[in-house]
Image (tube, rainbow, N blue to C red):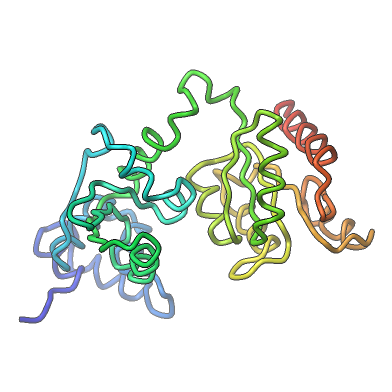
Amino acid sequence: MARKKMGEILIDNEVISQNDLEQALLRQKGTNKPIGKILGDMEVILEEDVAKALSTQFGFPYVKRFSRHKFPQNVLDKIETESALAHLIFPLKIDNKTLYLAMSNPLDMALQSDLSFKLAMRISPCVATPDEIKAAIKKHYLAEIPEDQENSTQIILLVDNQDIALNAAEAALKKGGYSIYKAQNGAEGLKIATQLKPHLIITDIVMPRMDGIEMFRALKTNGEIGNIPVIALSAKTAAEEEYKLLEMGFFDFIAKPINPTRLLARVRRALRDDNQK
C-alpha cells in the first residue's frame, strides 16, 4: 500500500484544510523546503504536528517530554555537544549496539550513516520537536552553565575547518575563562549560533560548504542573533583584506597564525564593548 504524504495525513487528522495544503504546495514550487516547513512558515501548524505526521508517515517512534529524564553519561558521550546543536539530535538510549536517537529531521540519512560509521553502531531514529531537543540539550549538555550565571558566563563560538587553528584558539580562550563551542564550517556554525546564541563568534573566512563571509551575512539577517559581534580570522594579512572585512561589519580582524595574547585582548575588547551597548 502506498505511503500517505504528509499533507494527506495532516488533512486526515484535521490539522490543516485542503486550502492550506494547496497554498503550501504553491509556495513550495521552486524551493527545496519540505512541506512541513512551508506550513510552519505559514503558521498553520505547530512543530508537534509535523513530528506526529512524520511518525505516522514513516513509522518512526514519536518521543516527547524526554528532556526531564536522566540519561547515563555513556549515552550522552556518544554525541558531541556541537553535533547535537548543529543537527538538533539527542541520544536517548543504547540497546544491543543500537543508538536510539531523537531527531528533528529523521530523514537525514547521510547524518545517520556518518554517525553509524563513526560510532560503529546502528542508528535508530526517533522523531521529536526541535523545542524538545533544544530543552534536552540545554539541560544535559549545557549544564555547566548554571541558570543563575547565564548572564555572567561568556560563551564563544569558534568556526574553522583547520583543527590546528581551532584547537589553538580554544586552548587560549579556555585559559581566559570562556566557555568554548566549535564548528567546522559556516553552515554548522550558523546552526549552532542559532541554537546557542553565543556572546561572540570568531570565524575563519575561507572554509568549505559555507565560508565565513556567507555565514556572517546569514547571521545579520537573523533578528535573534544578528547583533552578536563577529571577529574574522584570515591568513590573508594585507591591509586591504582587513579593511574589506571591517567595512562589511565584522567587529575585528585577526591575522593567522593566531597569537594567543592578541586573541585574548581582542576578545575581551569585543565582549566589553558589546556589554556596554
